[in-house]
Length: 303
Image (cartoon, rainbow, N blue to C red; front, side):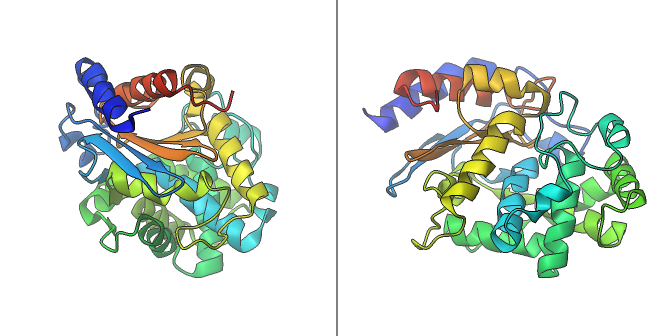
């Protein structure tokens, strides 16, 4: 198949959808992004890279960073993180506190905000600088040494992150944080504020399509760990729309409120789409439509 032709057709197909939904204006810096942007990149497991649209324009990766912080913790600490975080779909919004209270401080999964705070806390304990560790992994795997934290976005999140602060304090009250709340929040906001392009992210997430093998050819995760990260992405990566995403796309995926989505075809490729306008569940409207079209055109699905 002609991958470049497929991506060009997808960009044309989703163009009318780019203005459907709303940009994440509750983080003011994200609200300034043009909603009609769209990019897509496919990084094949064997090294080839294809892109179309705004695929080389950096954007705020936001919650997509949670995949990489989880992978880092698992690489250092194998599976002990699962004593502090469950692996079940939440069925509630990514910033909900209802289940955290009901489950006595154990977040439902590592991709909702409360779960990501626990993962960041563990990474902070292991490395001493969680955000720098995530940035280092993304630079290494993407091959782009200029991947950087957007200080304005991080400051904007810190100024308006009252709900995340509440979650962190609630986690601490149940004894599920090892570090001071302010340090965990600072690390979390910084990792979410990393700016990358579709190309950068597709390359950086390719180890999940290679069963854990990093860009340099050495194992980063074991095949079993890579399988587990992909499994949690499938069931929890798009929050309370995970069932709909699995139905339409049929791939492990992780979204962010910056409009990006990373999806994995194990053994074949990683895919990143970016469309800033979000639907009611916090996922890119054009991005999900593009991934739906991609799997339909290629026939690639874990199902």
